[in-house]
Length: 215
Image 1: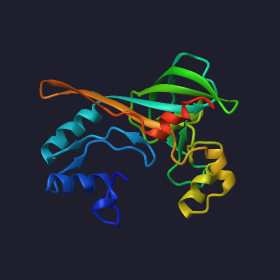
Image 2: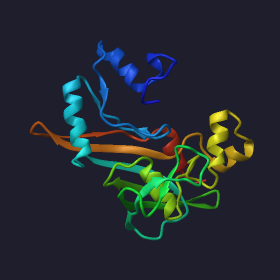
Image 3: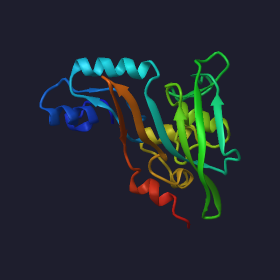
Image 4: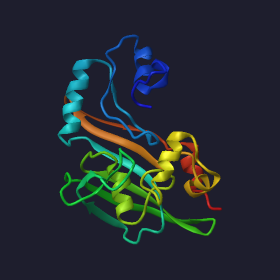
């Protein structure tokens, strides 16, 4: 979890960062969805967090993700330009969707490779969101018919998310998900700040990499 919970400082990334820094000024500059792995920016002090937060809000920070999705994406490169807003048809309170009256959102997608695993088609993607809407990448990829492997909300059945929260996932749910956490990874973040350019990157974990191995 990125943010503190009732379970104490060690239950969250920012809580652990503050323990490491030895003070309570550590701040998250960006955050990731619950199951997304990868780069999170943490400022040591409040002033730096404020500056970097404004930089992120201005769109001057470039974010690059990896995703593994269901099916073979036909186009090598594409731009998904589709506004996002609350999904009023879903019982899942945090679920959003593409809707004409939503907030502007644009995502660039590039195919890294198409592969087959257990006779099922998948695609490994580079994804660069040009805006920062909630669940943007997950919604956009599902919108074009290629949901992220393991996505409990934007996959084929959003009721899986409710069973996950309740701790009542069935063996059938787990088989459908294929992996414990969805396969979306924040690969790199780049920006210029205080006269210098900076790039922070993170390798995907073993579960992501192993899914790319042929079976």
